[in-house]
Image (tube, rainbow, N blue to C red; front, side, top):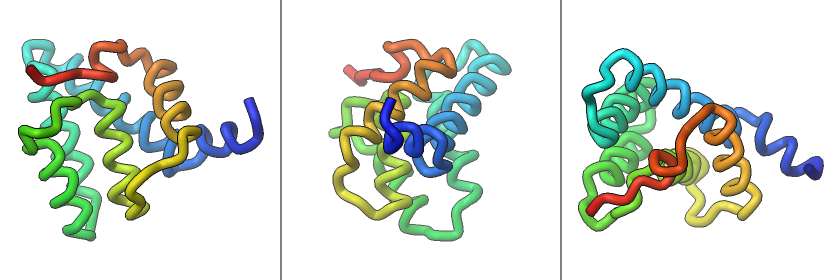
Length: 119
């Protein structure tokens, strides 16, 4: 692991966001195991949006969640979208993508949850 990879995983922007999402998802899933993935994701999104003062970020996350054209509603895509909206970037470096996957995996997030596709 290079120094840049280490910084990405330990930074609050990438690693911290991925860990927060994984922890919130696991907590909601544990407290109400009958909820579907999308219902859990809506709960996580509501909790995440409570902390923002910037309505553009809140609107962007809510739009992503409700957009029927977005078929990948997995946690990887959600974390990626959070970081995009917070940093106002269109595309993130590939190292960010790798760090997100590694942090979600370390938190016990299954592949089908990480890369959940809506039919």
